[in-house]
Length: 178
Image (cartoon, rainbow, N blue to C red; front, side, top):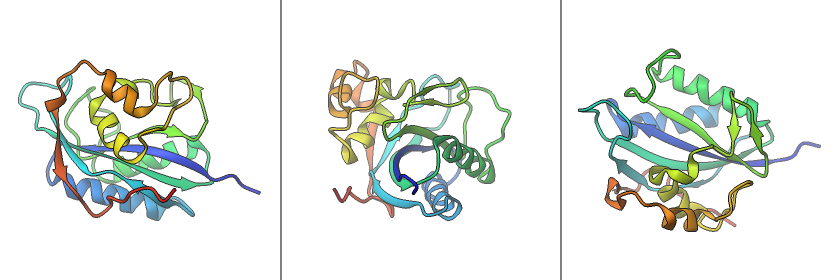
């Protein structure tokens, strides 16, 4: 019998039709991942670029949660494949503009410090553009290895709250069912 796991995935885009890229990313993940079920999706947020070249366009960000019985490494492979499908080159400069960026934030209680796939995401608790939408769908989530839940981690940030601005609802915004 297989075990279903909840996977948190951050999505971001700062090239072209950003919302369309995010939408296509979710659609591709749901088509590619066998038995995947979208259980939660946050609103869209526009985010000032962080550690990017001057003149870089703002990002559109969100977070979704889906459930499947795949392993985290299998989900990670799907994330990379979907990024590539939507035009993100495998070889690129760090923090360069991108049509789609997909990051695995968490995988249930799974923990890994493998350099290829560290879960939970090692900088999740430092990124307002991830915590803000994640707090919308999983405010009390406490991830393995973190002393605070998502709402507490968001409140502890010392960066400028205005760097992440609500950008509206979208097709995949849905609140968790349980």
